[in-house]
Length: 159
View 1: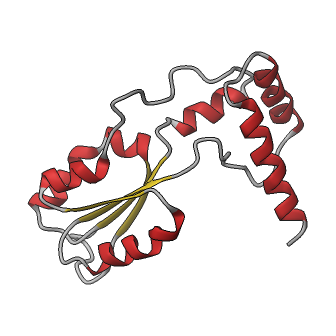
View 2 (view 1 turned 120 degrees about the vertical axis):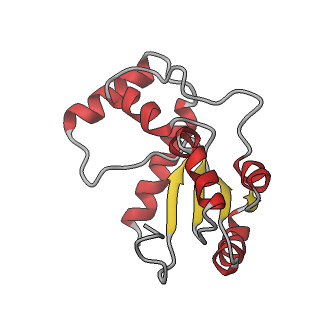
C-alpha cells in the first residue's frame, strides 16, 4: 500500500498472533525503507482462536504464548526500525506519536488485557449459550472474563 500511495501515511493495526505470522513482511518494509507504522495489540494470546473456542462451547486450549513471549519491539529494532514497547495505557499516545513522526518503519508493541473480549455487534442466544458451556467446562480465567464483561456492560448502560 505504501508503494502505491507514497505520499500517504500507512498505519497497520494488528494483533500479536497475526503479526507473529507475518513478521518477515515488516523486514521487507525495512529493506524497502517504507515509512510505515505498525501498532501491535499484544495480549500474548491467539485471541481470535481463544474467543472462537469459547463461542463454540470449548475452554481455550493452546492459545497462550509461553515464556519466552515474543518481544515485537525488539524484533523491529533488530530489523533496523524503531521499536517501542508500551506496558501502560497512559504511554500509548506518546509512543504512537513518536512512531508516526519517525522517518522510517516503526512498530509500537502495546500490552493489552488478554481477558478483554472482542464483542460482536449483537450476541446471538446460541453464542451466549456456548460461551456459558465453555465456562462450565473449565474455561481458564472465567472469573476475570465474567468480571470484565459485567464492567463493560455497566459502562455501556451508563454512558
